[in-house]
Image (cartoon, rainbow, N blue to C red; front, side, top):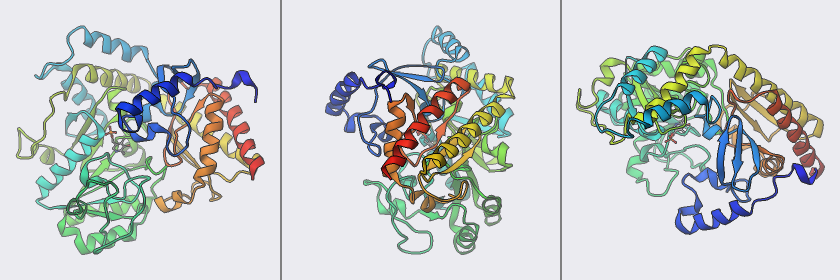
Length: 447
Ligand SMILES: *Cc1c(COP(=O)(O)O)cnc(C)c1O
């Protein structure tokens, strides 16, 4: 490695991090940004354009986070910027309805087939509200989620959530402990946990407790334990939960408008009762949404008795960014094929570079999502949280730092997906592969 390829100046990031730690817990406003699982000092980002991030020290990185999913068109896309500027000229918040909310709701229902949609401000609000609605609709208390799936940080969903420490079942079938302090056991007890990609376990849970369960919520493709791809048998079992009067809730906050125009639902042929969206739907501004069957959604206030509200919900700037993003995606049907092509070339490149260096890596990739697990399982065979957890996180951390040092900003955790956007071209793929070959070779030498 040569000095001029190294983004080694980090003095300004380090100084900002020190100031941030004095005034904000851990110095960040969302935990994974702190680089705890890979070590080192997080880079403070000054600006982002296309496929690149530039930090406050002036280092430039090929970006594989895309703000954790929203930036499917790349940063600072002219259509999105233009739409935000146009909205800005008309004022930033009304606390009364406006046309953009109707336009975005029409776009979402047209694209997804949902009959009704309600906008909120984050993915967390979307899942939290969808579950309240499911309970209000069914009159049942319990919900089911899957080990290692993340649905935002509402109390009842911080149970066996993502890369948190695993706790074993206590107190009966499906019962588990909270994965955060501050979540009362009583709340956690209402969340039953089953194993992802285990249709038999879900069938058993439904047989024994289906009559008490309001909803099953799931990531149709998991991104939050690293990428895990569902088997057809598991998807079939998910759809069978409706036989017990249980609502099926697809959490498409990460996958919606990303894996296809109609998300994982379109790609995998799902038919959920309710769907949650976030990330891409806001085009980089804070938007979440939930929607689906009219008979269920019409239970939401003021139409129905299930309360849910938001001072900034349907915000004109946020709606404008979402509308512009969906308009670009809808007008360019080839975009998903191009994202897939780039990402599968990236997957093949990583596999062969790792193989040449003698580093064990198992790649899961679907559409523009990818995780390279540092373990010697066959490609595509990591299917559950337990499988993912067998990865060598220390090796991943060294590889991550080597990539960052060569100007490639990968997701700073082994248990996250990376996100490819439409601004990634052959030039970025070349930079990435050159960095990856060197990073794997560096790991290989230490073995
Ligand atoms: C990111 C994410 C959420 C939470 O969304 P926020 O906007 O961060 O609150 C929920 N579910 C899934 C699947 C996600 O990836």
